[in-house]
Amino acid sequence: MDKVTTWAKNNKLTFKEQKSKAMVISRRKRKEDKEISIYINNKMLEQVQTIKYLGIIIDSKLNFREHIIHISSKCNKLIHALSKSAKVSWGLSHAALHTIYKGAILPLLLYGAPVWIEALKKECNETIYNGVQCITNIKIAKAFCTTSNEALCTLTGLTPVVIKAEEAAKLYNIMRNRQAYEIGHEVQPKDWLLPVHTTAENKQWNTYFMTAVN
Image (tube, helix red, strand yellow):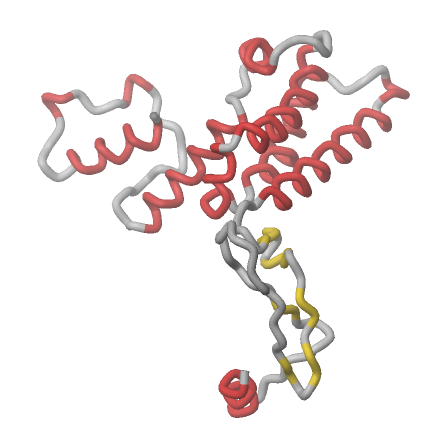
């Protein structure tokens, strides 16, 4: 920490101990002493189990379960608030609910997906995310609460949120490696390249495109 504080002073920066936290990140299952003492400005930092950084909650085990629970709870509150305010006008229309989901709910669910996408491989986390989409699908389709989310996605025409998260993570990795171009819009089937028209220059793009779609 001496090197950090020295660097901050040389660059005319200051770290406030009140806003700084300390956290030990480890996935070891064995019990061990994880108490640490880190000081800034001669004051010991508070040790925590989770830290929120750029809107993503990072826990000491890198499980991201706290982040998934937090975002799901935030989305559920937003959905119920909109439903409550729309009772006066007998509920929102099908098109309005579609717009709200794609414009407000889905961006919240997919934010930072490349960071925590591995967490959705656990069934408990996947169930939480599917539950948020299920509530929206029920309101869009005006269906019973016992209807499965898979059937609701078919009725509403919405892609399952877990698949959307995987797609967002794959597209980010493609863009990060700078191997793709013009993927900001959907390509209609009539515009797909045929094998006979595929040149050596765009063969690699087709491979990455099919990977992102699948």
